Image 1: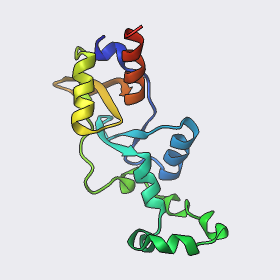
Image 2: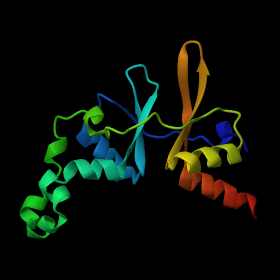
Image 3: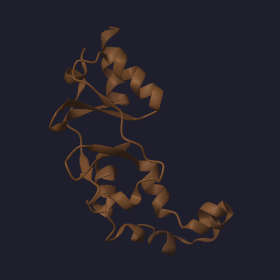
Image 4: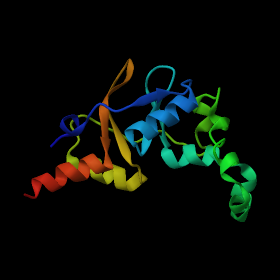
Length: 153
């Protein structure tokens, strides 16, 4: 199995996409994260669902988690307000790095090693040439596990 054979279409967003729509996309498709593309359509970062949730949690609760117990349901329903009118780029961690990118001819083991090495829930599969990086698809950890387990039967 080569990366090109394992890659599937996957939801992507740009750094300028609406953050609230990105959150809805994650929720609707139960995605572990989204691949964020830059202005040129090249992979820029992975926005994990956990990072999106972190954006929703008020700073005072992050600093003192015990305060979460005093927020009533009426106020908890408003947690998504920080996403309104905000671009996805603002939701990326300051420590966000370029996403792992596998070459189309990489083997399943090479993809697995890359995924494990950077602890990423997904790997972009892309061709690189003089004009830039061209996304072919994405391999998620769960999809890779599924395909590897199929090989065992």
